[in-house]
Length: 173
Image (cartoon, rainbow, N blue to C red):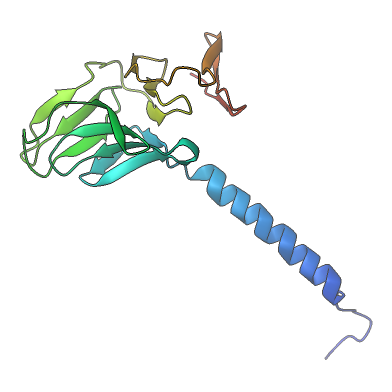
């Protein structure tokens, strides 16, 4: 049976609700998917990149096994591992070490940043620097002169990372 006392929402209310729902889902999808971050346990394969799009910064694991940081197509840093293997991958390990492995699972380059097992993250930052956080334990030193700084502050239990573009990431220990 149909209860005639129940009224359907007006078309404008349905449209407004759908727009709000769509905007919320789009925000959640884009804020949870970072193109400039590699998390502990994640792997990049040959041809894949981390990208900070506004300035066209790109950290690429090339198919020749070289890890290269590009600024608008110009190489500004590399691991100097070209042609030192085949089918290479880049892994952000859970011990804080960033490692390039060849197809035989042999390490051909690393940041030498092993620590205790924890959550670490490799970030291609707004200032073009590439940094491993879990405490800043390594940086490529490739930040662009004149760009807004990235500031690390906080206390030992609640460090705060504040990027120059106003983005704040809070990580607990």
